[in-house]
Length: 293
Image (cartoon, rainbow, N blue to C red):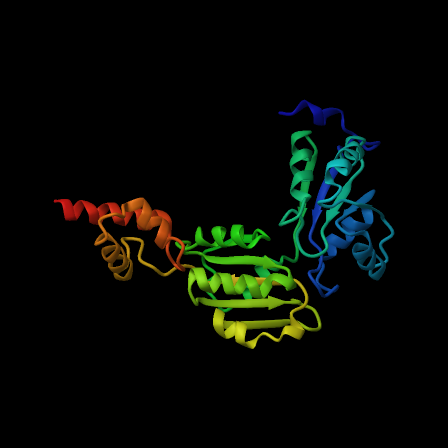
């Protein structure tokens, strides 16, 4: 038991609570009655963007004080918020859209609060991940949330190669100015899989595109590439029991060149779409063993 929490009480003898409050991802009516109640009752709302949250508060007549808390100031504002909680005051943390701590610095504040014996309470509600999955038309029995990939092309493509054998449905976020480039990378590396690309969910210009990645790219209007995107990609359907015949054929051709070893072949083939370095290297060793024996 953490001793720090015992002295953190307000006039009612209650320790301060950090409420993690989900807010609308677009339509302002998508908020729970409990969330509105908490936002009105807490001493402070820690908001990712004050102007954005102020519009929500104004819409519902919420006059609670707002304080900026985001990725740029979390290091300096975190201790201040902790001090307020230490005194026994309740705080609600909100993001610009959806559930806090998912792809934003809210998770840091939650972790610090736990470490200091502060009670953390979830106020559930909208989530872009679950909302997008529910209308994607893809398999949703097993999925993995990936979020934003690295901005730089090389690092992004390396990360995507690591997803080649991921069998679960994958959910990604992307900014409008990079979404086309990301879709091209996904198609080139993972193959032309089934996908769903969703933007402006629950808003006036809500749009959902489904099909193969190529079909979605052909249907994208450059003038309409606006708003935050959620991209859902089907998982790998390859049999995990062994490599496919195409891979074996490629390795067999390269093994005819006696100057190339397993590492050289794996390095060469892993630079091609759909090829995983470890899988190629492992199969090279197996095939070389068969040749020797």
